[in-house]
Image 1 (cartoon, each protein chain N blue to C red):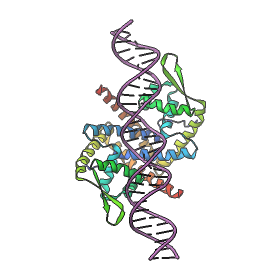
Image 2: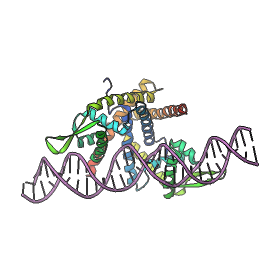
Image 3: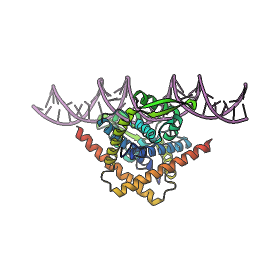
Image 4: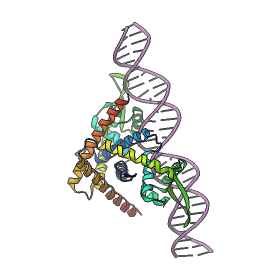
Length: 155
Length: 155
DNA sequence: ACAACATAATAAGGCAAGCATATTAAATTA
DNA sequence: TAATTTAATATGCTTGCCTTATTATGTTGT
């Protein structure tokens, strides 16, 4: 066994980081008396970036199935953070938008995000941190590309 | 809104990477005709590193509750990858070990891990990759430290 | 020696984040 | 206008955790 199975493998490592940062983020969220989950916040973040869109486009952006998005939107709509309005150009489709009530929450969420970032990057010199962040961005793009290519291959 | 909520925030970014790499890993696992999940593989990896241990120590190592570990071990025991034996020094405790059958699987898992790593790091120059990996390791350690400190503060 | 407390594993049950499959209505293409 | 595709959803599942008891034990203080 030259390379035995190892908790320090990059896959496990990234996963650990994700669980850790999610824990910190949720801690901050709770401290701010918010009731959204990290995954819900992610949906809101994508919505904030893309603006009013159809659900299936949002699903693409999030990298999940339309059905999964439906689930998130159901909850977010109940919390009155998003709205579904019929698409006048396609009566099957719905356009989702953030409500006014959401913008308040969004600000608090981004504050929680910033605090999380501070906690995480604490003790790392800014330069290292910057390199790490940029590499992470690049990695995500690379992997996303290879993933869609593979999907096409299967079809 | 100076720093609006953003899918490129480090928290979301790390989470995306985790989901992506998990997807690739599970793809490899399936291709190898294995039936373990990524989380189960993680448990096995920790067990391989630490050797025979009591369950609650394994739980510490994994950063989860003893009850969660019980669940994983139940499944892994049914797959005959781990064994629970009574601890002669403490009749409440159980020592968990990997079975012989596991070592086979372990090798295949680590191969899947290596392939995953290759896929992920593809297109990144080795030096960047190395810096990224090392920073990730350091981050995990840092965060783990601050997390346990905070836990103590709460108590 | 014994009461009080702490610890190891587990049972029961819950919640969140997805997924797959099937359905319905509407749009598109042939 | 028939056949196919697409948009959203209902239903129901799996996985990865968690919390809160409960039951055996161990440990500690008196």
